[in-house]
Length: 576
Image (cartoon, rainbow, N blue to C red; front, side, top):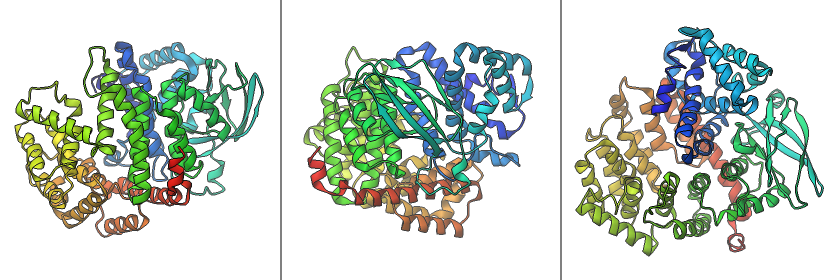
């Protein structure tokens, strides 16, 4: 946050966008600069690896929807800008800046920024002013290349449609098309969309020096290999905001790079998150994704576990509407998570670095999702909570970064007594960050009445207006029953909630809607929610509602696809 806001001294203050349709000049650059500055100060935090599973993933999730918008989006009235303070302006904007740096190199990138700042100091600019400065320092057609990334919505899927493997090289035939999360059919006009795509590759020998620009619908590239069994990954370093569809042969070969960890962490994570999105869109078989996941059983990198965690959580939500499949999937996920727990453990170590601490936090969160009823897990969580309950300053027993997860484990295995204990801490906590641990976990109590009580309590005025939706989300995302309870509450309290939010930021109502209705995976529920908001329109939240409904229909289609695959058979899971 600090480095992001400091970046606005240059992009925002020294040089200001001419109008709101170039909002991304402020926020996209600041999103890039926050990571660049932090990486310079703390290189051990591997901020650019974290960027791939944070900013980049958020951008790709939203921009894969038909209800997304271009980076440069027309703004006719100033109040419309509230709708585009989102992952496109911030995260995709930052991803595009990162891509330019990778293409032109840091020297030309930095020199171009210097020219831009001096030329337009204390003035107003448009996007083409920045492109012009970089063109001058790089001697590359930046305007031509970048128009496809900022002026049109969405991003490309690069498919490997042909391959010729030799002992010392591989030739890949590529094509590109607009990637949509739901895999909906493209019209003839939509099929013509193309991007100017820099193709970077890596092999077991590292990232290749050669870079190919894919300016047309198809391209062919040849990559050297050091062995006949070598592997290759496209979009090395996840530098370009796009998805890659490898062939089954490429996936099989990459398995070795995952297991021996010669494939870099951000690429191991990107390969998996791409695969999840590709399966969801119908471009890859579900069985391929699960077999790919099984290669990560010895994974120990935080960045990669961010990707694994996102995929496991996504599949858990989707399969929760199919009891038998979810049971088989949960057993598979438990094995991965328990393996990690054995390596990382609950106790901090003197040798822990920043990423080790974050990894332990992810691990305990996943234990809370997939292993909360394991006797060792539940007893350890209870022991730590009781020690913390006796002394809130006991940060060794219950560090701040694992409190929400431990609270959830305690609540899932408990009843009224445990609920009261966690709720009591909300009043005892000395700062708002601590209170949020309670808000994020309280709805995970299994009893229906306690879930309903949570919703009533968080909207009673006991919780600050900017925070009340966190507890709603803890109910809405707790389980299948929790979704129904939170949505029913939202509908029956619509007028009261609208009054609470009042003239505040539309983002508050957006968060409320997502918290109460965001976890459904059925077309019927999507139709119901769409009908509700037609009868009860919220113009300032229209874009968010449209995105929510589109995502819900995509998830419903995804579940149907999984049910038709081998994942519906117990024998498939037993074969892993």
